[in-house]
Amino acid sequence: MKYVVAVSGGVDSVVLLDMLVKTGEHELVVAHFDHGIRNESTDDANFVAGLAAQYGLPFKVTQGHLGSAASEELARNKRYEFLKGLADSEAAKLVTAHHSDDVVESIAINLTRGTGWRGLAVLNDSAIERPLIDVTKAQLYDYALSQGLEWVEDETNQSYRYLRNRLRRKLGAAPEEAKRTVRALRNDQCRIAKRIDEECAQLQTTSRYFFTMIDDAISLELLRHILAENSASLTRPQRRRLLLGIKTAAAGTTLDAGNGIKASFTSRNFIVKQPL
Image 1 (cartoon, one colour):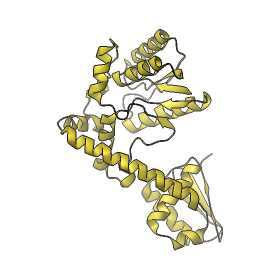
Image 2 (cartoon, helix red, strand yellow):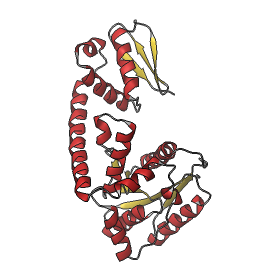
Image 3 (cartoon, helix red, strand yellow):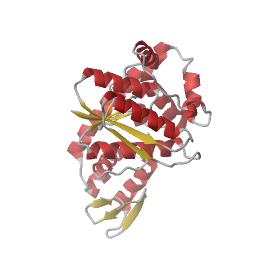
Image 4 (cartoon, one colour):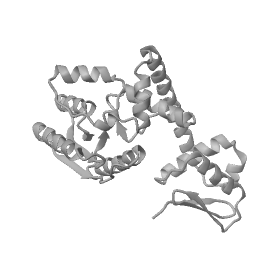
């Protein structure tokens, strides 16, 4: 199996890369996305380039030039756009260093912002391998120190500007038992999400009549699946608006569903069109 390994230069990804190299089971490509949010980000890219050279691995990097005002969401989206595109071009599986503390933080963020049940099934993209998902941050530090590894610290991890950092400080005081409970619930939700996705694959249809006959909650999950099959996505409120169009729009009309996605309607069916 060929892996594209996302390496930021932080302790998590440095440990991940070291572990994968030492298993010797995969062909590895080291990938780094330079956000361009900090002036020092070029130093991080150079560090990761040196790390790849040390292990004798190919290194791929791109510069985002996002600027200091870039949001956490924009930076994440652009990073994954690069990483997933690279994995596709390399015919490889993308591997990231997300760990069990990231699970708890991501759930806390979603709950703070307001979320449906899928907001608890975090870090659950089947296109991404996450071998450290059951490992704690403390265990990663222990490994790094025991192996004499070096890493860089991103100063933005200390900034209160980002919600994740503010929540991280609060979660640090949470009992470990509570965190284990949250992680176990997340695993349950991931299993449920997989079963629902499998059911949606069986039910997939563009029949307008079918959508008028089933429960709205099921309709919204089915629409989510149909959109994903077309490499598109809408928020839950946007999907509700699309569902209303499916039920009531006149034949021959088109609905702007959001995110550049349009739905056109015949008397019997609807067609989802993503932006060119």
